[in-house]
Image 1: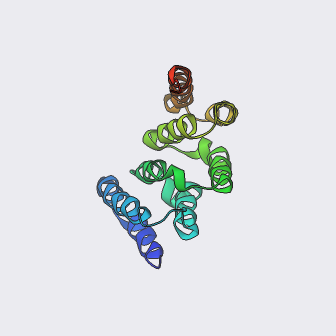
Image 2: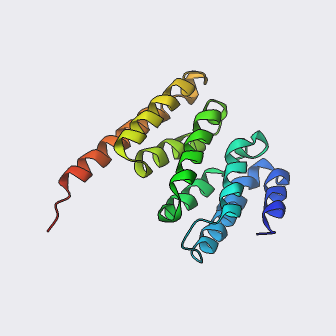
Length: 160
């Protein structure tokens, strides 16, 4: 857990062309570490929030990899952590200029919240997306598409 300041420093200081590869490697290690815990540790969660809330980090290529690592450990998240993620997404989504991060947020919202929560969150993100340049829009529509697919899948699940 003492490693997070060092990881943040690495992400902040690496040159852009190497940042995505660094984040991919670090997110893999992060995900592997999470396998050790039944509940998502606060220090790990705070690290993710720092990445999502600070322009110093969310503007860097490859940050989306950490959100995918959280996605893979989603069962360990508490309701409060889910609420905190939704608040972070809503607060900063209009500032996310990395297309991969924007898409990852919408994908996460569509797949990891209840249908009602996902619809509400995606609606809030849509309002934030309207503040982005035209070429940065469209990810929320993709999120709604994924949510539609999730609804269909849920409707086809039958209990034996």
